[in-house]
Image (cartoon, rainbow, N blue to C red; front, side, top):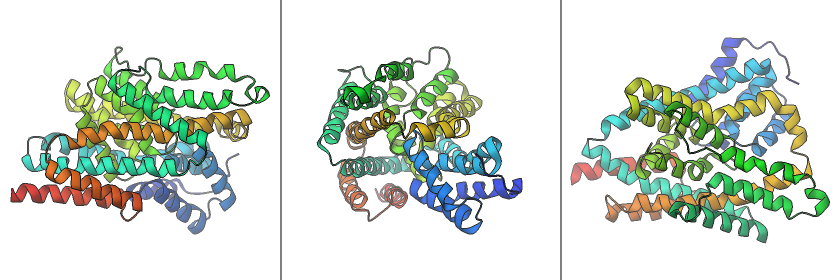
Length: 393
């Protein structure tokens, strides 16, 4: 049950807004800021409840830091508090992504802007490869590595058009495969889960009922499947966004870069995609509507899981069958990210400035894998290199 405490609403909302504005550095940095401000400084939540919530959020689909903001608000002020805390945490990043999205549109005709993007893209590709490597290093059992390899192969075949199975369905199938590999008594009742992959992916790439409905549908279903970190959004969205004509592969990569350099979770790349798709269809107002549809769609599952079902989910995640499905799904996540990284790298390195893009990719990959530099400064340096090249050439 939520813990009631007389925390004034302006102070409550202002704190989450401030954390949202300063929320650079990735999910672990966000969670550390939330713990410092809410547990240690203000003591609104005791450490045990914070750790309990973190364990729940790590097991759920969606960005863990955003879900923690929602969860902490729910503890203090119930479901209204969760709505306020989650919205305040995400709003600054969303507004910054919107601003950068409009600057991106206006800068397309400028040579210096184009050159800067061409130097950023290989850095983003390297960051994604480093993320995949970080995930695969945690998988030490043979079945986990095999699952990741098979999912990676499936994503690559899907990209080539040889296997019509999107990444989200592949991950769910990996979860079910893990469940059915258990002894019969542990997998009893697993047939009830079979409709889940089809229900989540059916129509995921269809926008035939209207652009806004299509944006909301695609991003809502993606929000149900973002296990393992925000960059998992890439294999889940990349092909759909390109096939639907919302963005080209290079434009999608630019959107990921904007999501990386903005405060808040990288899942706010959804705001960029929705804005560009809407703007192309109907101008500025449609762009704002598209950004809202995509952003609400991808974060709505997080709000729903935390505000409506926290007690149930805390019990469910202890169930052996549920844990096995999650184990299989999470084992496949590195393969999905690596499969998407292959096509993203091809996009980032095949055009533009090969004499600088390949060295940038290699150096950025080394810095990212070794942990010597975080994504934000890497992208900022690449941006400055692009501007310098355009000024000198």
